[in-house]
Structures are given as C-alpha cells and as structure tokens.
Length: 107
Image 1 (cartoon, rainbow, N blue to C red):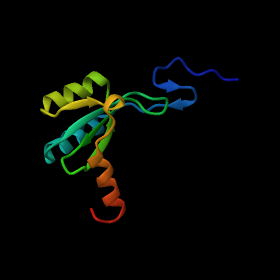
Image 2: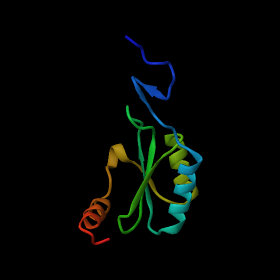
Image 3: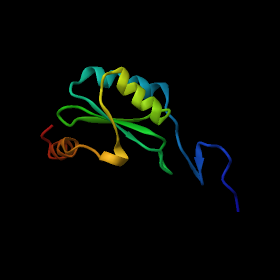
Image 4: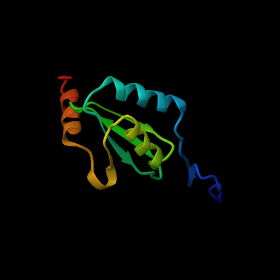
C-alpha cells in the first residue's frame, strides 16, 4: 500500500493545485471591472487550496485559488473590498439569485 507523500500540496492521493499568477491576474482584473465587490475567503479543504470568492453587487461572481488566507484578506484590503470568512458567514443570497437567473438564461 502506498503512503501519501510528505508534500504539503498533497492530501492522500489527491494533488491540490496551488494559486498561479494567472489566478492572481484574473482576480485583479475582475475586482477593478466591477462595483460593489465583496470577498469571501474559503478555507483549504481536502480537494482545494484556499480560495477567494469575489461577488459583485449584482451577484456575479468568480472564484480562484490564492496563496493563503492572509493573502486573500490583504488582497481585499488593498482593493478596498470588504472580506469575510466564508466558513463563518456563508455566501450572499445575491450570488445564489445570480446563479438561478443565469441557469434560467436571464443573465
């Protein structure tokens, strides 16, 4: 039986992809192109590294991997975007409504 590697980016047999410069570039471009943005920092899981969920005023959203929880909050502070721990507050209703409208073809 194989044992998981001691690599911090591995959990069991699953490799967790870390944040890339393309992820950071996307977040920067996204946050400056929209208004009323809030950040929701999602903790590392067995499958995903730390992610930053950005939600605009109308519920449009994007999610990308980030280097750390601290990095995500610092990113939001730099862009003057409020940030929250998603594990504590959840995600906003406007995001769920946007998903519903998108699925119905209204967006």
